[in-house]
Image 1: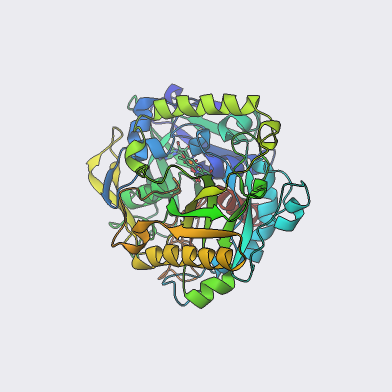
Image 2: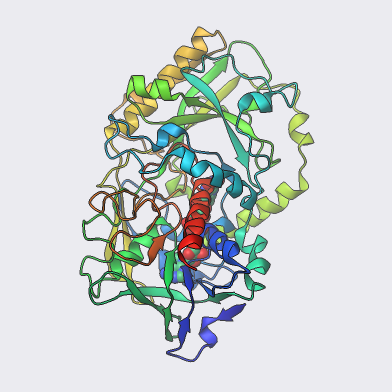
Length: 513
Ligand SMILES: Cc1cc2nc3c(=O)[nH]c(=O)nc-3n(C[C@H](O)[C@H](O)[C@H](O)COP(=O)(O)OP(=O)(O)OC[C@H]3O[C@@H](n4cnc5c(N)ncnc54)[C@H](O)[C@@H]3O)c2cc1C
Protein backbone atom coordinates (compact mmCIF):
# COMPACT_ATOMS: atom_id res chain seq x y z
CA UNK A 1 0.00 0.00 0.00
CA UNK A 2 1.32 3.46 -0.89
CA UNK A 3 0.43 6.69 0.88
CA UNK A 4 1.89 10.10 0.05
CA UNK A 5 2.57 11.70 3.45
CA UNK A 6 1.72 15.12 1.97
CA UNK A 7 -1.91 14.06 1.55
CA UNK A 8 -2.38 13.16 5.23
CA UNK A 9 -4.04 15.59 7.61
CA UNK A 10 -1.44 17.59 9.54
CA UNK A 11 -0.62 15.93 12.87
CA UNK A 12 -1.59 12.40 11.79
CA UNK A 13 -0.55 9.43 13.91
CA UNK A 14 0.76 6.41 11.99
CA UNK A 15 1.00 3.15 13.97
CA UNK A 16 2.40 -0.30 13.19
CA UNK A 17 4.60 -3.15 14.40
CA UNK A 18 7.84 -2.63 12.49
CA UNK A 19 8.90 0.78 11.19
CA UNK A 20 11.70 0.99 8.61
CA UNK A 21 13.19 4.43 7.91
CA UNK A 22 14.58 4.76 4.39
CA UNK A 23 13.75 2.82 1.21
CA UNK A 24 17.17 2.13 -0.34
CA UNK A 25 18.96 -1.20 -0.71
CA UNK A 26 18.68 -2.00 3.00
CA UNK A 27 15.17 -0.65 3.69
CA UNK A 28 13.58 -2.23 0.62
CA UNK A 29 15.27 -5.59 1.32
CA UNK A 30 13.82 -5.53 4.83
CA UNK A 31 10.34 -4.52 3.58
CA UNK A 32 10.30 -7.27 0.93
CA UNK A 33 11.36 -9.84 3.56
CA UNK A 34 8.43 -8.76 5.77
CA UNK A 35 5.82 -8.54 3.03
CA UNK A 36 2.89 -10.94 3.39
CA UNK A 37 3.38 -11.42 7.12
CA UNK A 38 0.85 -10.73 9.87
CA UNK A 39 2.74 -7.72 11.28
CA UNK A 40 2.01 -4.21 10.01
CA UNK A 41 5.15 -2.72 8.47
CA UNK A 42 5.60 1.02 7.99
CA UNK A 43 8.23 2.01 5.43
CA UNK A 44 9.07 5.73 5.58
CA UNK A 45 10.81 7.22 2.55
CA UNK A 46 11.84 10.87 2.53
CA UNK A 47 11.58 11.22 -1.26
CA UNK A 48 8.98 10.28 -3.85
CA UNK A 49 9.36 7.86 -6.76
CA UNK A 50 11.57 10.23 -8.78
CA UNK A 51 14.49 12.51 -8.16
CA UNK A 52 13.47 15.96 -6.91
CA UNK A 53 16.27 18.57 -6.68
CA UNK A 54 14.70 20.27 -3.62
CA UNK A 55 14.63 17.00 -1.67
CA UNK A 56 18.10 16.12 -2.93
CA UNK A 57 19.30 19.39 -1.46
CA UNK A 58 18.65 17.98 2.05
CA UNK A 59 21.97 16.11 1.58
CA UNK A 60 24.10 19.20 0.92
CA UNK A 61 26.94 19.07 3.49
CA UNK A 62 30.09 20.66 4.77
CA UNK A 63 33.20 18.75 3.65
CA UNK A 64 36.33 19.19 5.80
CA UNK A 65 39.41 16.93 6.07
CA UNK A 66 40.25 15.12 2.83
CA UNK A 67 38.34 16.30 -0.25
CA UNK A 68 35.22 14.27 -1.06
CA UNK A 69 32.31 13.95 -3.49
CA UNK A 70 29.56 16.50 -2.91
CA UNK A 71 27.13 14.49 -0.74
CA UNK A 72 24.07 15.79 -2.60
CA UNK A 73 25.45 13.93 -5.66
CA UNK A 74 26.80 10.90 -3.79
CA UNK A 75 23.50 9.68 -2.31
CA UNK A 76 20.01 9.73 -3.78
CA UNK A 77 16.97 10.75 -1.79
CA UNK A 78 14.04 8.92 -3.34
CA UNK A 79 12.48 5.44 -3.44
CA UNK A 80 15.27 2.96 -4.26
CA UNK A 81 17.87 5.26 -2.67
CA UNK A 82 21.39 5.26 -4.06
CA UNK A 83 20.78 2.04 -6.03
CA UNK A 84 19.12 4.41 -8.52
CA UNK A 85 22.66 5.17 -9.68
CA UNK A 86 24.97 2.54 -8.19
CA UNK A 87 27.24 0.57 -10.55
CA UNK A 88 26.57 -3.00 -9.38
CA UNK A 89 30.17 -4.20 -8.67
CA UNK A 90 29.92 -6.89 -6.02
CA UNK A 91 32.09 -9.31 -4.12
CA UNK A 92 32.25 -10.88 -0.68
CA UNK A 93 34.49 -9.86 2.21
CA UNK A 94 37.29 -12.24 3.25
CA UNK A 95 37.46 -14.05 6.63
CA UNK A 96 40.43 -11.86 7.66
CA UNK A 97 38.28 -8.72 7.22
CA UNK A 98 36.22 -9.73 10.27
CA UNK A 99 39.21 -10.69 12.45
CA UNK A 100 41.08 -8.66 15.01
CA UNK A 101 44.41 -7.75 13.42
CA UNK A 102 46.95 -6.44 15.94
CA UNK A 103 48.49 -4.12 13.32
CA UNK A 104 45.11 -2.55 12.42
CA UNK A 105 43.89 -0.42 15.34
CA UNK A 106 40.14 -0.81 16.08
CA UNK A 107 39.79 -3.88 13.83
CA UNK A 108 37.78 -7.00 14.74
CA UNK A 109 34.05 -7.61 14.35
CA UNK A 110 32.13 -9.42 17.10
CA UNK A 111 30.87 -11.76 14.35
CA UNK A 112 32.85 -13.76 11.79
CA UNK A 113 32.56 -14.26 8.03
CA UNK A 114 30.84 -17.62 8.70
CA UNK A 115 27.99 -15.74 10.42
CA UNK A 116 27.41 -13.70 7.26
CA UNK A 117 28.08 -16.37 4.61
CA UNK A 118 24.54 -17.89 4.42
CA UNK A 119 23.09 -14.39 3.99
CA UNK A 120 25.53 -13.56 1.17
CA UNK A 121 23.95 -16.33 -0.89
CA UNK A 122 20.45 -14.90 -0.31
CA UNK A 123 21.69 -11.36 -1.00
CA UNK A 124 22.99 -12.53 -4.39
CA UNK A 125 19.38 -13.11 -5.44
CA UNK A 126 18.27 -9.61 -4.37
CA UNK A 127 21.06 -8.07 -6.45
CA UNK A 128 20.64 -10.42 -9.47
CA UNK A 129 24.25 -11.52 -9.20
CA UNK A 130 24.02 -14.95 -10.78
CA UNK A 131 25.51 -18.13 -9.29
CA UNK A 132 26.99 -17.75 -5.82
CA UNK A 133 30.42 -18.89 -6.95
CA UNK A 134 33.64 -17.09 -6.03
CA UNK A 135 36.22 -19.74 -6.88
CA UNK A 136 38.44 -18.33 -9.64
CA UNK A 137 39.27 -21.81 -10.96
CA UNK A 138 35.54 -22.44 -11.50
CA UNK A 139 35.32 -19.33 -13.70
CA UNK A 140 38.63 -20.14 -15.40
CA UNK A 141 37.07 -23.41 -16.57
CA UNK A 142 34.18 -21.62 -18.27
CA UNK A 143 36.03 -20.14 -21.26
CA UNK A 144 39.25 -20.94 -23.14
CA UNK A 145 40.45 -17.33 -22.76
CA UNK A 146 39.85 -17.30 -19.00
CA UNK A 147 43.46 -17.88 -18.07
CA UNK A 148 44.62 -17.21 -14.51
CA UNK A 149 47.94 -15.43 -14.04
CA UNK A 150 50.42 -18.01 -12.68
CA UNK A 151 51.10 -16.30 -9.36
CA UNK A 152 51.88 -17.77 -5.94
CA UNK A 153 48.47 -17.51 -4.25
CA UNK A 154 50.16 -17.55 -0.84
CA UNK A 155 51.00 -13.93 -1.71
CA UNK A 156 48.64 -12.70 -4.44
CA UNK A 157 45.43 -14.42 -5.55
CA UNK A 158 42.61 -13.78 -8.00
CA UNK A 159 39.51 -12.49 -6.26
CA UNK A 160 36.28 -12.79 -8.24
CA UNK A 161 33.71 -10.06 -8.75
CA UNK A 162 30.12 -10.30 -9.92
CA UNK A 163 28.29 -7.49 -11.68
CA UNK A 164 24.68 -6.63 -11.06
CA UNK A 165 22.75 -5.32 -14.09
CA UNK A 166 22.79 -3.01 -11.89
CA UNK A 167 19.57 -3.78 -10.03
CA UNK A 168 17.64 -0.58 -9.40
CA UNK A 169 15.76 -1.40 -6.18
CA UNK A 170 13.16 1.33 -6.73
CA UNK A 171 12.11 -0.16 -10.07
CA UNK A 172 12.54 -3.84 -9.34
CA UNK A 173 10.82 -4.01 -5.95
CA UNK A 174 8.24 -1.22 -6.21
CA UNK A 175 5.31 -3.56 -6.95
CA UNK A 176 6.39 -6.06 -4.28
CA UNK A 177 6.36 -3.26 -1.70
CA UNK A 178 3.29 -1.33 -2.85
CA UNK A 179 1.14 -4.44 -3.46
CA UNK A 180 1.91 -6.03 -0.08
CA UNK A 181 -1.20 -5.49 2.05
CA UNK A 182 0.80 -5.41 5.31
CA UNK A 183 3.48 -2.97 4.07
CA UNK A 184 2.47 0.68 4.26
CA UNK A 185 4.93 2.75 2.25
CA UNK A 186 4.81 6.47 3.04
CA UNK A 187 6.68 8.65 0.53
CA UNK A 188 7.64 12.31 1.15
CA UNK A 189 7.93 11.23 4.80
CA UNK A 190 11.22 12.63 6.11
CA UNK A 191 12.06 11.56 9.63
CA UNK A 192 13.44 14.61 11.41
CA UNK A 193 13.60 13.34 14.99
CA UNK A 194 13.76 10.02 16.81
CA UNK A 195 11.97 10.44 20.12
CA UNK A 196 13.23 8.51 23.14
CA UNK A 197 11.27 7.67 26.30
CA UNK A 198 12.01 9.59 29.51
CA UNK A 199 14.87 7.35 30.80
CA UNK A 200 16.25 7.12 27.21
CA UNK A 201 16.07 3.33 27.15
CA UNK A 202 13.74 2.92 24.15
CA UNK A 203 12.39 4.72 21.11
CA UNK A 204 8.96 6.18 21.73
CA UNK A 205 8.18 7.44 18.25
CA UNK A 206 9.39 9.30 15.19
CA UNK A 207 8.60 12.77 13.94
CA UNK A 208 8.02 13.06 10.20
CA UNK A 209 7.94 16.31 8.25
CA UNK A 210 6.89 17.14 4.72
CA UNK A 211 8.16 20.06 2.65
CA UNK A 212 4.69 21.59 2.84
CA UNK A 213 5.05 22.05 6.61
CA UNK A 214 3.00 19.10 7.84
CA UNK A 215 4.24 17.11 10.82
CA UNK A 216 3.15 13.55 11.64
CA UNK A 217 4.07 11.04 14.35
CA UNK A 218 4.91 7.41 13.88
CA UNK A 219 4.75 4.76 16.59
CA UNK A 220 5.86 1.14 16.27
CA UNK A 221 7.12 -1.68 18.44
CA UNK A 222 10.46 -1.87 16.66
CA UNK A 223 12.32 0.64 14.49
CA UNK A 224 15.03 0.05 11.87
CA UNK A 225 17.15 2.93 10.58
CA UNK A 226 18.09 2.35 6.94
CA UNK A 227 18.95 5.86 5.70
CA UNK A 228 22.56 5.13 4.67
CA UNK A 229 25.67 5.41 6.88
CA UNK A 230 25.92 9.21 6.82
CA UNK A 231 22.21 9.95 7.22
CA UNK A 232 21.79 7.35 10.00
CA UNK A 233 24.51 9.07 12.03
CA UNK A 234 23.07 12.50 11.26
CA UNK A 235 19.61 11.45 12.46
CA UNK A 236 20.92 9.87 15.68
CA UNK A 237 23.09 12.90 16.47
CA UNK A 238 20.32 15.41 15.79
CA UNK A 239 17.80 13.44 17.89
CA UNK A 240 19.09 15.20 20.97
CA UNK A 241 15.98 16.36 22.83
CA UNK A 242 16.35 13.84 25.67
CA UNK A 243 20.02 12.91 25.16
CA UNK A 244 22.04 16.09 24.55
CA UNK A 245 24.80 14.25 22.62
CA UNK A 246 22.27 12.42 20.47
CA UNK A 247 20.78 8.94 20.70
CA UNK A 248 23.02 5.89 21.02
CA UNK A 249 25.90 8.27 21.68
CA UNK A 250 26.61 7.78 25.38
CA UNK A 251 30.22 6.96 24.56
CA UNK A 252 30.71 9.55 21.82
CA UNK A 253 30.92 6.93 19.06
CA UNK A 254 28.05 7.87 16.72
CA UNK A 255 29.47 9.26 13.47
CA UNK A 256 33.04 8.12 14.20
CA UNK A 257 34.99 5.57 12.15
CA UNK A 258 33.55 6.80 8.85
CA UNK A 259 35.23 4.67 6.17
CA UNK A 260 35.56 4.72 2.38
CA UNK A 261 37.47 2.58 -0.07
CA UNK A 262 40.55 4.24 -1.48
CA UNK A 263 40.22 3.98 -5.25
CA UNK A 264 42.93 5.44 -7.48
CA UNK A 265 45.65 4.41 -9.93
CA UNK A 266 48.67 2.85 -8.19
CA UNK A 267 50.96 1.30 -10.79
CA UNK A 268 51.47 0.35 -14.43
CA UNK A 269 51.93 -3.23 -15.56
CA UNK A 270 53.54 -4.45 -18.77
CA UNK A 271 53.04 -8.11 -19.71
CA UNK A 272 56.23 -9.78 -20.92
CA UNK A 273 54.23 -11.52 -23.67
CA UNK A 274 50.73 -11.15 -25.07
CA UNK A 275 48.33 -13.49 -23.28
CA UNK A 276 44.55 -13.83 -22.92
CA UNK A 277 43.52 -11.41 -20.17
CA UNK A 278 39.77 -12.03 -20.38
CA UNK A 279 39.76 -13.19 -16.75
CA UNK A 280 40.89 -9.77 -15.57
CA UNK A 281 38.92 -7.60 -17.94
CA UNK A 282 36.11 -5.43 -16.78
CA UNK A 283 33.03 -6.67 -18.58
CA UNK A 284 30.77 -4.04 -17.03
CA UNK A 285 28.59 -2.52 -18.38
CA UNK A 286 28.64 -4.67 -21.50
CA UNK A 287 27.89 -7.91 -19.73
CA UNK A 288 27.35 -9.44 -16.33
CA UNK A 289 30.20 -11.93 -16.75
CA UNK A 290 32.27 -12.19 -13.51
CA UNK A 291 35.90 -11.11 -13.62
CA UNK A 292 38.92 -11.13 -11.33
CA UNK A 293 41.16 -8.65 -9.53
CA UNK A 294 44.53 -9.31 -7.94
CA UNK A 295 44.25 -9.38 -4.16
CA UNK A 296 46.70 -9.67 -1.29
CA UNK A 297 46.44 -12.99 0.59
CA UNK A 298 45.66 -13.07 4.30
CA UNK A 299 49.17 -14.50 4.91
CA UNK A 300 50.81 -11.61 3.06
CA UNK A 301 48.68 -9.10 4.99
CA UNK A 302 49.79 -10.66 8.28
CA UNK A 303 53.43 -10.91 7.30
CA UNK A 304 53.63 -7.33 6.02
CA UNK A 305 51.22 -5.84 8.59
CA UNK A 306 49.12 -4.14 5.95
CA UNK A 307 45.45 -3.66 5.10
CA UNK A 308 43.42 -5.70 2.61
CA UNK A 309 43.58 -4.48 -0.96
CA UNK A 310 42.95 -5.45 -4.55
CA UNK A 311 43.65 -3.97 -7.95
CA UNK A 312 41.85 -4.16 -11.26
CA UNK A 313 43.38 -3.99 -14.73
CA UNK A 314 42.51 -1.02 -16.90
CA UNK A 315 43.81 -0.14 -20.33
CA UNK A 316 46.85 2.03 -19.69
CA UNK A 317 46.43 5.73 -20.55
CA UNK A 318 49.41 7.43 -22.25
CA UNK A 319 52.26 7.68 -19.71
CA UNK A 320 52.42 11.49 -19.95
CA UNK A 321 48.67 12.02 -19.49
CA UNK A 322 48.08 13.82 -16.16
CA UNK A 323 46.02 11.79 -13.67
CA UNK A 324 42.72 13.41 -12.82
CA UNK A 325 41.00 13.54 -9.44
CA UNK A 326 37.52 12.05 -9.06
CA UNK A 327 36.06 14.42 -6.54
CA UNK A 328 36.19 17.68 -8.46
CA UNK A 329 35.02 16.02 -11.68
CA UNK A 330 31.65 15.02 -10.19
CA UNK A 331 28.86 17.46 -11.01
CA UNK A 332 27.06 18.23 -7.75
CA UNK A 333 23.89 18.20 -9.83
CA UNK A 334 22.29 14.81 -9.16
CA UNK A 335 19.79 15.38 -12.01
CA UNK A 336 22.67 15.49 -14.50
CA UNK A 337 24.22 12.37 -12.97
CA UNK A 338 20.92 10.51 -13.20
CA UNK A 339 20.63 11.41 -16.88
CA UNK A 340 24.11 9.98 -17.54
CA UNK A 341 23.32 6.82 -15.58
CA UNK A 342 20.00 6.25 -17.37
CA UNK A 343 21.76 6.59 -20.73
CA UNK A 344 24.42 4.11 -19.61
CA UNK A 345 21.75 1.63 -18.42
CA UNK A 346 20.01 1.85 -21.80
CA UNK A 347 23.28 1.34 -23.69
CA UNK A 348 24.21 -1.65 -21.51
CA UNK A 349 20.89 -3.33 -22.25
CA UNK A 350 21.62 -3.14 -25.98
CA UNK A 351 25.04 -4.76 -25.64
CA UNK A 352 25.78 -8.46 -25.60
CA UNK A 353 28.76 -10.35 -24.30
CA UNK A 354 29.90 -11.01 -27.86
CA UNK A 355 31.29 -7.49 -28.19
CA UNK A 356 33.77 -8.37 -25.42
CA UNK A 357 34.53 -11.85 -26.66
CA UNK A 358 35.20 -10.50 -30.12
CA UNK A 359 38.39 -8.82 -28.90
CA UNK A 360 41.07 -11.06 -30.40
CA UNK A 361 44.07 -9.12 -29.15
CA UNK A 362 44.43 -8.40 -25.48
CA UNK A 363 46.53 -5.36 -24.54
CA UNK A 364 49.93 -5.81 -22.92
CA UNK A 365 50.00 -2.51 -21.02
CA UNK A 366 47.69 -1.89 -18.07
CA UNK A 367 47.03 0.64 -15.38
CA UNK A 368 46.55 -1.10 -12.02
CA UNK A 369 43.67 0.55 -10.24
CA UNK A 370 43.65 0.33 -6.43
CA UNK A 371 40.69 -0.65 -4.30
CA UNK A 372 41.78 -0.71 -0.70
CA UNK A 373 40.16 -0.80 2.69
CA UNK A 374 40.71 2.23 4.87
CA UNK A 375 41.87 1.58 8.44
CA UNK A 376 39.07 2.32 10.95
CA UNK A 377 39.87 5.71 12.41
CA UNK A 378 37.91 7.45 15.20
CA UNK A 379 38.91 10.85 13.83
CA UNK A 380 37.32 10.15 10.46
CA UNK A 381 33.81 11.22 11.29
CA UNK A 382 30.37 12.63 10.63
CA UNK A 383 29.23 15.45 12.92
CA UNK A 384 26.55 18.12 12.66
CA UNK A 385 27.01 21.45 10.92
CA UNK A 386 25.66 24.69 12.38
CA UNK A 387 23.59 25.11 9.19
CA UNK A 388 20.12 23.55 8.95
CA UNK A 389 18.26 22.10 5.97
CA UNK A 390 14.80 23.14 4.75
CA UNK A 391 13.17 20.79 7.29
CA UNK A 392 15.13 22.27 10.20
CA UNK A 393 17.57 19.36 10.63
CA UNK A 394 21.28 20.24 11.09
CA UNK A 395 23.25 19.44 7.98
CA UNK A 396 26.14 16.95 7.95
CA UNK A 397 29.77 17.88 8.40
CA UNK A 398 32.00 15.18 6.92
CA UNK A 399 35.59 14.95 8.08
CA UNK A 400 37.16 12.10 6.10
CA UNK A 401 40.59 11.27 7.55
CA UNK A 402 43.18 8.80 6.34
CA UNK A 403 46.22 7.40 8.16
CA UNK A 404 49.80 6.42 7.33
CA UNK A 405 48.80 2.75 7.42
CA UNK A 406 46.45 3.38 4.48
CA UNK A 407 49.20 4.71 2.26
CA UNK A 408 51.90 2.30 3.40
CA UNK A 409 49.54 -0.61 2.64
CA UNK A 410 48.94 0.50 -0.95
CA UNK A 411 52.65 0.89 -1.60
CA UNK A 412 53.47 -2.51 -0.11
CA UNK A 413 50.63 -4.09 -2.09
CA UNK A 414 52.14 -2.96 -5.40
CA UNK A 415 55.64 -3.95 -4.30
CA UNK A 416 54.36 -7.49 -3.65
CA UNK A 417 52.40 -7.60 -6.93
CA UNK A 418 55.57 -6.42 -8.70
CA UNK A 419 57.70 -9.03 -6.95
CA UNK A 420 55.28 -11.88 -7.74
CA UNK A 421 54.61 -10.96 -11.39
CA UNK A 422 58.37 -10.48 -11.88
CA UNK A 423 59.23 -13.77 -10.21
CA UNK A 424 56.80 -15.68 -12.42
CA UNK A 425 58.07 -13.88 -15.51
CA UNK A 426 54.57 -12.71 -16.44
CA UNK A 427 54.98 -8.96 -16.20
CA UNK A 428 56.90 -5.97 -14.91
CA UNK A 429 55.25 -3.49 -12.56
CA UNK A 430 56.15 0.15 -12.10
CA UNK A 431 54.81 1.99 -9.06
CA UNK A 432 53.40 5.47 -9.68
CA UNK A 433 55.45 8.32 -8.23
CA UNK A 434 52.86 9.35 -5.65
CA UNK A 435 53.49 6.16 -3.69
CA UNK A 436 57.03 7.24 -2.87
CA UNK A 437 56.15 10.90 -2.22
CA UNK A 438 54.69 12.45 0.92
CA UNK A 439 50.95 12.82 1.48
CA UNK A 440 48.05 12.08 -0.88
CA UNK A 441 48.04 13.31 -4.47
CA UNK A 442 45.39 15.52 -6.06
CA UNK A 443 43.86 12.44 -7.73
CA UNK A 444 43.02 10.71 -4.42
CA UNK A 445 39.73 8.93 -5.03
CA UNK A 446 36.99 7.03 -3.22
CA UNK A 447 34.44 4.43 -4.22
CA UNK A 448 31.25 6.36 -3.26
CA UNK A 449 31.04 3.92 -0.35
CA UNK A 450 29.99 5.11 3.11
CA UNK A 451 30.67 2.75 5.99
CA UNK A 452 31.14 2.82 9.75
CA UNK A 453 29.48 5.65 11.80
CA UNK A 454 27.50 3.22 14.04
CA UNK A 455 30.06 0.42 14.33
CA UNK A 456 29.19 -2.97 15.76
CA UNK A 457 30.77 -4.16 19.04
CA UNK A 458 29.90 -6.46 21.89
CA UNK A 459 30.47 -3.64 24.38
CA UNK A 460 28.70 -0.24 24.30
CA UNK A 461 32.09 1.32 25.10
CA UNK A 462 33.42 0.18 21.74
CA UNK A 463 30.47 0.34 19.41
CA UNK A 464 27.06 1.89 18.83
CA UNK A 465 25.22 -1.31 17.86
CA UNK A 466 25.47 -4.82 19.27
CA UNK A 467 26.11 -7.95 17.14
CA UNK A 468 22.37 -8.02 16.25
CA UNK A 469 22.61 -4.42 14.98
CA UNK A 470 20.54 -3.12 17.92
CA UNK A 471 21.59 0.26 19.30
CA UNK A 472 23.18 -0.67 22.65
CA UNK A 473 21.41 2.02 24.66
CA UNK A 474 17.91 1.57 23.21
CA UNK A 475 15.70 -1.55 23.44
CA UNK A 476 13.89 -1.26 20.13
CA UNK A 477 16.11 0.64 17.68
CA UNK A 478 18.17 -1.22 15.05
CA UNK A 479 20.50 -0.05 12.27
CA UNK A 480 20.57 -1.65 8.81
CA UNK A 481 23.07 -0.97 6.04
CA UNK A 482 26.80 -0.32 6.09
CA UNK A 483 26.85 1.93 9.19
CA UNK A 484 27.47 -1.10 11.49
CA UNK A 485 30.59 -2.14 9.49
CA UNK A 486 33.61 -2.38 11.81
CA UNK A 487 36.10 -2.59 8.96
CA UNK A 488 35.50 -2.03 5.27
CA UNK A 489 37.23 -4.97 3.58
CA UNK A 490 38.44 -4.33 0.05
CA UNK A 491 35.11 -4.96 -1.65
CA UNK A 492 32.21 -2.67 -2.49
CA UNK A 493 29.72 -2.67 0.37
CA UNK A 494 26.22 -3.26 -1.02
CA UNK A 495 26.28 -7.06 -1.18
CA UNK A 496 27.54 -7.20 2.41
CA UNK A 497 25.04 -4.62 3.65
CA UNK A 498 22.13 -6.49 2.05
CA UNK A 499 23.44 -9.71 3.63
CA UNK A 500 23.58 -8.02 7.05
CA UNK A 501 20.05 -6.69 6.51
CA UNK A 502 18.80 -10.22 5.83
CA UNK A 503 20.55 -11.36 9.00
CA UNK A 504 18.85 -8.56 10.94
CA UNK A 505 15.50 -9.46 9.37
CA UNK A 506 15.84 -13.08 10.57
CA UNK A 507 16.75 -11.83 14.03
CA UNK A 508 13.65 -9.62 14.15
CA UNK A 509 11.51 -12.55 12.95
CA UNK A 510 12.48 -14.34 16.15
CA UNK A 511 11.88 -11.35 18.42
CA UNK A 512 8.88 -9.53 16.86
CA UNK A 513 6.05 -12.04 17.03
C1 LIG B 1 27.87 6.47 -8.24
C2 LIG B 1 27.79 5.33 -7.25
C3 LIG B 1 28.22 4.06 -7.61
C4 LIG B 1 28.16 3.02 -6.70
N1 LIG B 1 28.56 1.79 -7.12
C5 LIG B 1 28.54 0.77 -6.26
C6 LIG B 1 28.97 -0.52 -6.68
O1 LIG B 1 29.38 -0.73 -7.82
N2 LIG B 1 28.92 -1.53 -5.75
C7 LIG B 1 28.49 -1.34 -4.48
O2 LIG B 1 28.49 -2.29 -3.70
N3 LIG B 1 28.06 -0.12 -4.07
C8 LIG B 1 28.08 0.93 -4.92
N4 LIG B 1 27.65 2.16 -4.50
C9 LIG B 1 27.16 2.31 -3.11
C10 LIG B 1 25.69 1.85 -2.99
O3 LIG B 1 24.89 2.68 -3.77
C11 LIG B 1 25.28 1.92 -1.51
O4 LIG B 1 26.14 1.04 -0.79
C12 LIG B 1 23.85 1.50 -1.24
O5 LIG B 1 22.93 2.14 -2.06
C13 LIG B 1 23.52 1.84 0.21
O6 LIG B 1 22.24 1.36 0.52
P1 LIG B 1 21.44 1.94 1.76
O7 LIG B 1 20.08 1.34 1.71
O8 LIG B 1 22.23 1.79 2.99
O9 LIG B 1 21.36 3.53 1.48
P2 LIG B 1 20.67 4.30 0.28
O10 LIG B 1 20.62 3.46 -0.92
O11 LIG B 1 21.30 5.63 0.19
O12 LIG B 1 19.16 4.47 0.77
C14 LIG B 1 18.81 5.27 1.88
C15 LIG B 1 17.33 5.68 1.73
O13 LIG B 1 16.93 6.37 2.91
C16 LIG B 1 16.16 7.52 2.56
N5 LIG B 1 16.32 8.49 3.65
C17 LIG B 1 17.45 9.12 4.04
N6 LIG B 1 17.22 9.91 5.11
C18 LIG B 1 15.89 9.76 5.40
C19 LIG B 1 15.05 10.32 6.41
N7 LIG B 1 15.51 11.16 7.34
N8 LIG B 1 13.74 9.96 6.42
C20 LIG B 1 13.24 9.08 5.50
N9 LIG B 1 14.01 8.55 4.52
C21 LIG B 1 15.32 8.88 4.48
C22 LIG B 1 16.79 7.98 1.24
O14 LIG B 1 15.91 8.79 0.51
C23 LIG B 1 17.09 6.64 0.56
O15 LIG B 1 16.00 6.18 -0.20
C24 LIG B 1 27.68 3.23 -5.38
C25 LIG B 1 27.24 4.51 -5.02
C26 LIG B 1 27.30 5.54 -5.94
C27 LIG B 1 26.83 6.88 -5.51
